[in-house]
Image (tube, rainbow, N blue to C red; front, side, top):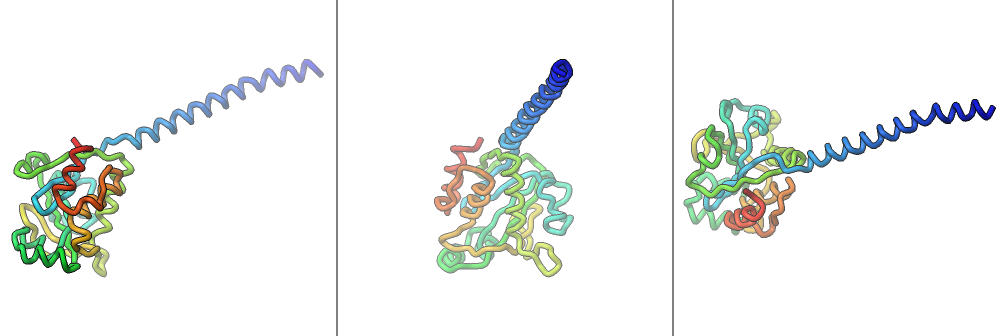
Length: 219
């Protein structure tokens, strides 16, 4: 009986060792996967056009045909998206009366979408531009947040308003209200903060404030 018991114990040992090895392997694999997901690998850019800032990302990831319901932006490599006051943004930022009205009277918001081919630093060589890296999770969260900012019509599609400011671009109705307490740059910082970027939306009402913070964490 003792011999049989000892034999059974010896037979169990390889199984126990195998289970322990499996647990160790699974732990390492999961930890490695989590580390990879937490590694900042997704490159985006933030542009500064004086009054407004914009977020630039690969067009294929934003997928405007799915998001906006149009093929207008197809055959481009990058897309720049900005949020702002509906009247002032469309006036190219040159009408100071509209600018003052936008700040001191809560107004409707609008989204500006611009698609282009050249690498962002080349496309916006006349503007300040900062590269920022996001984790995969942060990147997906950013895209979801941007998509959710577009106002949807009864058909579920984004609502086009007018031709955009430059190149292949268009304005769309947007969610939210523009005011002195929440500007176009507040929105940019808000989206970036939601994506995991170390930036304070409350201290980002001006474009220069956004860029100053991003220079500390960007490339």
